[in-house]
Image (cartoon, rainbow, N blue to C red; front, side, top):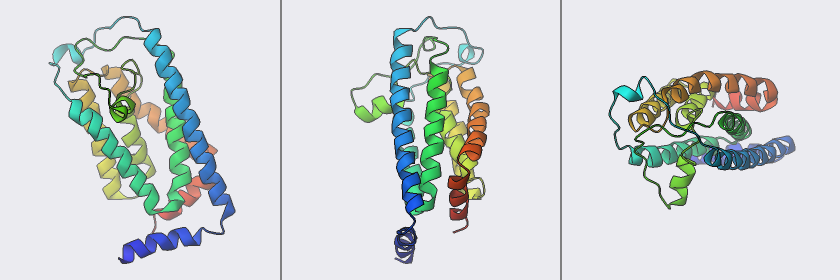
Length: 220
């Protein structure tokens, strides 16, 4: 009960903080724009796909059905991130903007090279909206969002050893999942760590006031 009271108190403290609500609104706008970019990039890659290529890891492991983990797992992850943001509103602007930057950068990478999905992917097309949202077009390969997003969260919550461990585990787990399912090439997975770290560093530079607010929330 006290924890719930503390959460409401955090929102009450920001009631007169006009700049905070402006930054949160901008975060929502940035995220929506990045999702539109992502949709456009997915559409483009789907219509410009070429051929599948060989891969040193995928060529040596059998394809395993990972649909449940791939779909429901990423939805649980996004829900968990949303809860972390809602639990302390000071986190929301930087969370929204850093995720928006992640989606926008990934959208740019998607349109550069148009490889077809790996041979023998196990993903079964679905009419479920959430599953379509989780899986993209099937040609949205470089780089792996399933690997990169939890790694970005690990960077953001690095000072909290428990959240850091959870997100690092999730990043490695999802990376292994998409490889076992032959849903991504190995370069999509391994490059995600390096590109995502770069996105994190850029976020610190271009959203310094939002990060300062976010950082203060980690002490509560």
